[in-house]
Length: 544
Image 1: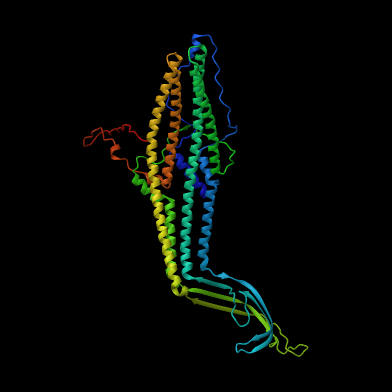
Image 2: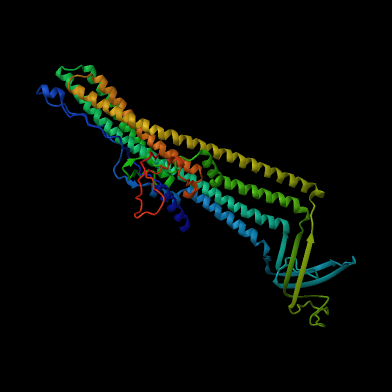
């Protein structure tokens, strides 16, 4: 358990160390706020109309703060899927131990008592009436008459080939279970990370909805004041009021998204879904995890070496190869039955009395038990089996060969799936990065447009319809800017997981020659009295 916790702590540190400074709202570019003037109030003595209050909230107080590191630690300790995968590892590890223990014999300790009254048939065929008793005590059991101990004290009963190849196959099953557990861990990491990003998106959209609603309320107040003072049309005021009601609906929907995102994250962390989780960070910023630029071919090579799904497929292929080898050698692998028993054995009958000469009241010899004397038996049986005159063995070989081919095809199928996931994630990262720049420019432009239109309305020189349209575009651009950053971070974690969570040195690359600045100071050859001062390279654009 401590090792597992250390793995998750290192995993969380690695994710956070590559830079996720996340949460509630994407930071829009700074812009000048529109001047706070009351156009109609400056020309008349009318009181300022009251701004409509925001709608009621569905968010109950008492949220629980959480960060990404805590979420990953909780997922590593409480997620049922991870716990199930670890129990599967424990099961196959015990099966491997059992396969290795086949080299040790079974130990049987017991006793048996035999009492016979009546007729027996001798080996010559004649019938004999006898009353006899016997008792055995020690290693083994079921010692009757002159035969061996039927249940030996130390007992081997195995096929050498089956035991050996069974042990080798059990080792591969342990390797497969560990690889599958790593794949489950990666999948849980991706889903927890994505759920946390969804929670950040929901909190960010709620903050944006509050800001949009405040601006919409101010615009509705101004247009309503113009309409009541006769300086504007009532239709414009009604249009602004409708836009305000839409902002109210957006705010309520954002609160609902916050609750649903919190419930999904609670499900992954095995928490009570009534717990409202709230991110502790303040901004959503791009968080690159995979260095860029890295060629797609290099990423594909890393994924083929690191993905646990491929490691699981390779170990399954090796397991099937061991089963094929077993099927081929099975007819020539001996079955060994070995037994050793030792204990005390005694008894008597009415034909032989101990001590001799003891007679009963009817004049017959009375059966008596002899003293328990020592007894030891050692038996070895070796035989070879050709199933169904060898035809069954041929069928077993063909079936095992088919399973090997099936597993190789599944391995190829997994390789194609991994390569497709890496290529898709790589393309998604590049597209989202370019979209960040586009949406940032859209926020700047829409902010300036709304500020200008709002100023013109307050000065009585603009149309309310233009300001309403600018407000609508501003709100949309804010949402798109937030969504683009969240989607970029999601694409980054998807790419990192599709690579199999490679270590940092697997992604390290030398600096490209075109990014290395040339020297700007010519140093003549020969001795120098003072060292040459180092030159500072020019700042280079680096993609986050």
